[in-house]
Length: 318
Image: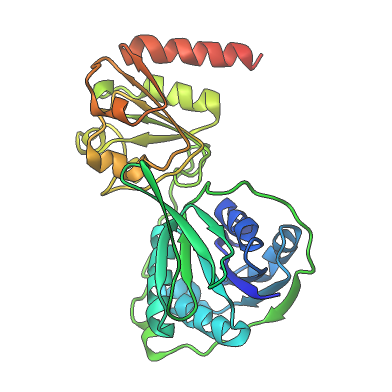
């Protein structure tokens, strides 16, 4: 059976959820071969094997931590040469997309970004993308070289499927560009205890309508075990950190449930959340554009509606 390369997104050996989703999707088109790089790469093997990786290629070097992106592209290029896969799958994070684009250019292949599903086709893997505010789905495939495909988080349920997970060292020779952009310092982000925004299964967002007060939004998010997002208007006003911005100039999310509170639904915001599986909006303006997109809408003051919703959720949780 053909093999599929899966780039492993991990932090010191702790595999992030989007990678486990990629392994699930990879099994639809071939046998997953995981590529884990950097500190703790070898520690990912057991988790990757439990989720279907038939092989795990690992490599650790100071370059992965000291320099941006290019060393990882060098490693993936080496993995492509070794495995000759039918496709390379990468998470659709900001870094993932840059890695995928550089890799596709290196190996002379086509690229598909922000896929939400994958299936096997007679002429290669077929990717599904959600377009035009999730009004349409398109199917496409790469016709040149080895397909490089980035997949949005929450596009597939994680399925544990034990496999061999044989670990081997990947031979990597770094090119002259690998040391071009050096990391001079890092400041760890303070943890909020909430899920990572781009990976969360539920996102609760606030916009201009919160009027500088995210208390109700945060309380609802905590009741649901959700991440907190914000519109550009809220972020630009200084009401919430830029790291939580959802939209065209912020982060793209694709959760199972997205709850928009006091957000009008401008196209820039919709571009960042339109592929959410179920969308709920609370807005006192019945003509707000967000209602054209939602599955469920509540016309009302969020400061009345959201606390009641939070109270009901907490009551049902017991």
